[in-house]
Image 1: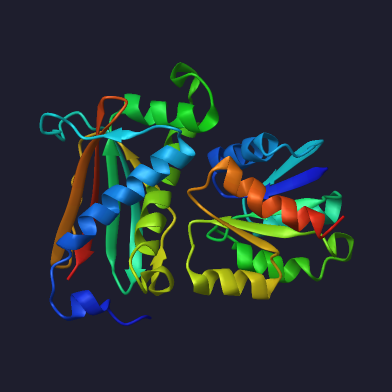
Image 2 (image 1 turned 45 degrees about the vertical axis):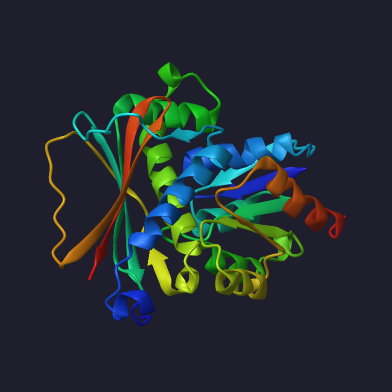
Length: 162
Length: 125
């Protein structure tokens, strides 16, 4: 197991990683989906987000990267990735959202010096529905970005265990 | 050319196939496998000319697959390009040491696929 990331070991906050998280997400959407993420003019609310993708991180940083969106947005992601109409997107939707989450997690960790080799990712898990709660057992810090994909809300967060 | 794409995501396999076509490669057939173990079965059964392979996969990961591929007589010399979210220098070195000929980081553009794959094919006529 790798030692904890020096920034975390020194008790520093990870707020400076938020722009890297946003950049990681923007790059994934631009390169793999041919689409841009936009900043909302009004606050993005979590209500109605019924698709959740989760990727675990372990090593220098341990925790979870979570992507939340609506079913409509998830179908839009799958459609763009597959080059089909979103109404044609079927069982590939969950696979697509899981892959987007996985690529954001990988791209994010590769942007932090030393973490590319020092942090492993789990395979993604996708949850559908709204009637659930995610609980981190360990004391943790949450970094979050709220954006729009095709005018629909998208919340990407990293919960880092302290 | 017959290409084998190995990734546990069926969506990603389709994206990689489309990127190869957009790169202008003359692809006669795309074969797919969901992990390294399935990929070994494919190369023992079918002739392939190029393999694009993810690293993080269940059952058998991409690095194990590349190492075991060396022992498959019928697949000897078939170039493997890794295509993965694991983009650190350490992972690149591991993959190349295991026998991969190229490395593409996700997220990628079709141009990046082209830039990595064409030189590999040129060295392996």
